[in-house]
Length: 120
Image (cartoon, rainbow, N blue to C red; front, side, top):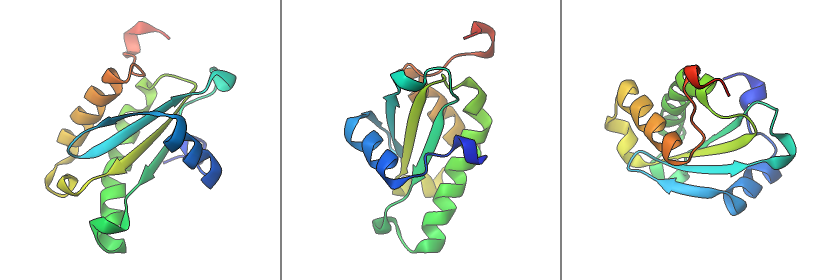
């Protein structure tokens, strides 16, 4: 994932978690915060997996799955938003196509998805 896509500083990550709106799913929790001060800038994505999911190897595997899904849908995410994806245990059995489809559905629910044809 390109560095400009990442939600990096811990303070920014926590700000999105505290002030953003969340949409839970079996595979992950989607948290979105619309940044009115940066509407023209590309969206930033943060990905997390808690220690209760397992060891570092397992958590990194879950985060890699989410990153791969985000790379496929990133061009269709609305500008000026910060997004956090928090992995959940059932993602272990999910394939990439299933995660991508779920991510698209969740982004549409959050009103931050736009098709390439919408031009916006």
